[in-house]
Length: 382
Image (cartoon, rainbow, N blue to C red; front, side, top):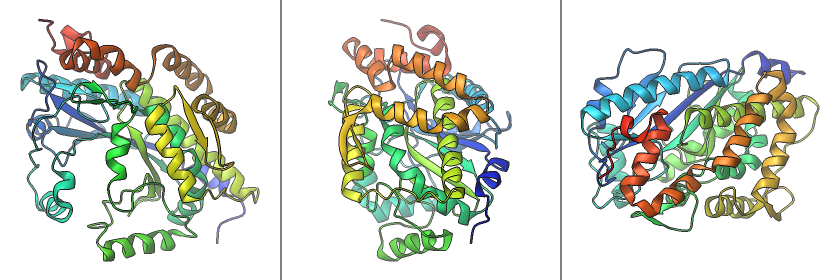
């Protein structure tokens, strides 16, 4: 049973946290480099953000501390990216924010650890070349039952967040005609895609337990849903986005995710039911976002009609405008969206750089990731 005013409960605890994964690559070839554990080992103790190991040794992950503003989370990411990039350069690698490798010609090397070994055994060849990188936003809510109720409202906006973050268009250095190859790779895993409709936190956990029992998930920490409840914290984790080029892009997504959750709480308080799109239409909407990004067609999961990505983004901004204003983030979101429209998404930036070859794409991404020039980021043109 929810209180009569879930909006105020969510506002009171609507904190933010970001987890983001990065790839380490050779500056000359853009091939992944297996120095992740060494980079992580040299980056502990710098601040409120935490460096973390990833499944592949060519990846690193960062988790911010609990933040009250999207700008604070972005500031932590800015510092983390700079320090990780510095240590990566010491190992002859570039740190890049990309949803998937620019090129990759060999199987991954697994990070040591029992859990990673168990995952590799369980899923077999599915993980043999998986080096995709995502951005996950955690929005704090008062309790897991409140999170479960709000999760249903979040689902229809997942395709728009994917389109906005799409940053993995290249396969072996060539344009694969998809804005997010990461989204396609993820869709191959069992029980992937949007979360099921849930009635409570217990219902959410029963879904996961059943899928663990069926063998789709190895444990409750490796669900492939694009949004979920934390297994142990009162947060909604929105994990549909590719890793994005700049900290400002991450700040934008964090602000939008929180605003979606807070707006959902307002609807819940007013007795407005969550829309319930069918899974086939959601699949079509997610596929369209992965295919076109922000520059083409989209699907509205609620009306079940074709539209454009720009119209869906405009609808999202209109929907969450009061929540953004309440948190003092409306002007930042508006300005960042205008800059992104001018500059292009990560997928568009990669496509512009691609004619220069994989090394040029890696140099561009390294510069975007840290805010440095390509030479400062470790790339010297040949």
